[in-house]
Length: 298
Image 1 (tube, rainbow, N blue to C red):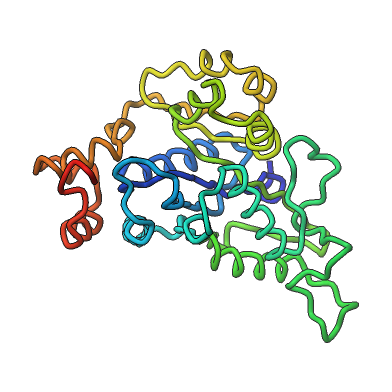
Image 2 (cartoon, rainbow, N blue to C red):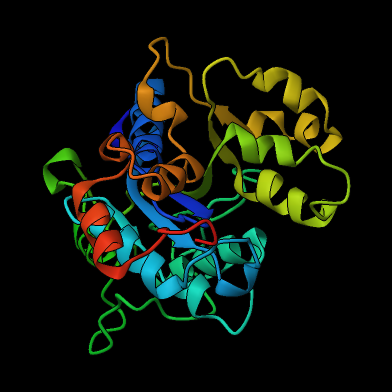
């Protein structure tokens, strides 16, 4: 497949990030690596969206602290960013609403409609502007002048860089003429624990699951030994949209796969030196400076 014929992907991860661990970042890296290896996708950005304070999870520190820790954890990344929208809302937001927010935001930024996994053949893609509203990249002094594909991509990459750290190297892309198009999708990035939660009766609304898995799609980075096939067979909705679930397969075991926020908090509470294996140094420094997670209450 050519570069422009591949689906361009933004990975979105929702969660408490209490605190964000090396494992969370590892999940992004492994997902991107695997998607690139399939030859069908190009990951151009990653978004970390910390949950709202009203989520009510015991020991959840304020979003101000969690946002700062997340920003410190990705400060050296050129493609992953932290988005505060979910944390800044008046109340807790569903995962479905967070995905829809970023989809709508992307529409406004690009002036295009994102490809839908259920109707890929009929949904306009990047490079095909909506008719209803003039796209933001259009030259209003010359409305009859259509931007070339290279100018279009330059504007998109500039805009995406502001909202999701998508700053792909322009040398990787070759555009010919004004009709070049490429599809863009937002995929939910998660671990196998979230996939398992889909099977718990009453925990998720069926309508939300239909949107998350059916309309968007998910990328699962499972922990070692987890049977994702068995998990998916336990849910009729997961079985229905099985083709929209991408399971990252990795032949090598990696210690980051078992790192959890819970384990990190326990290490901090007990003064365990192994915390350096779980958290990046800037995050550890911030936690100590702010006196977070020192007692069992978080």
